Length: 305
Image (cartoon, rainbow, N blue to C red):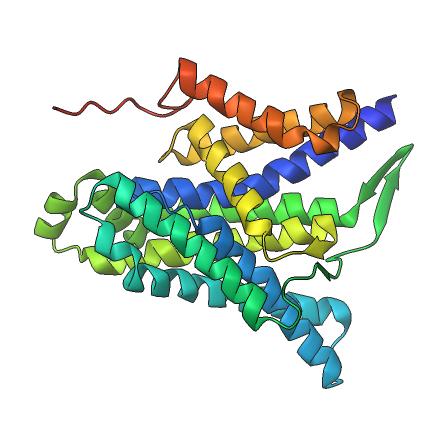
């Protein structure tokens, strides 16, 4: 029983880590731009396709790289590419809605997500079909009766390191000071010689690159990648950010851990729980919004009407 409990706790931490990497992007973009980037999950999901294409190209060219090394290079390249893709999409689409009503930006980013999914399906070879995704690690570590996959340790360790780096960047670097200044008051930030467009680009790059890592972990955990996985991953990440409080990075982490806990509990306790886990996750989201609309760590916003 102890070994089984430890396995469930490990699954909870792995899922919570993956969801955190996606939810942080939503909270970061909302906190700085005050825009809900609803296509964030679809943008992140392009990352695994880029990584898979690079691994296949390396294999086809018989380059002197092992599978693990090729996958590492592919993941790093995917991070950079998705970061730049986020900046490009902001420049092409999202920046045009910064001063528009929130509903316009929401509809535009929902439509943008559909465009991204269809482009993957059309441009990637046999893009409509699920693709097997190589495992990041296959080894295990056994401690007594507890079997710990190396993949789980990598996901948790990398996620913790990235979250710590992101907090350090926001709190202790000149770029982080500028990001916080723009998030707090755009007009005052301009008076202090901060160039908002550059900060928006940096924010999109960071959020998109971190999301790409979350998407790669998600598909490696599932063992397969599909062009429409971005919908599910985006909705879960957005729900985690909403539960914790949009704009709050601590809230994104808390919301992700809560959703991951519900995910694991449903699969363990409910018959055929894997088929119904999303129902319980979104029920939790609704309950939080009903009783605490600003999220668990979010601050209420008052507006004159």
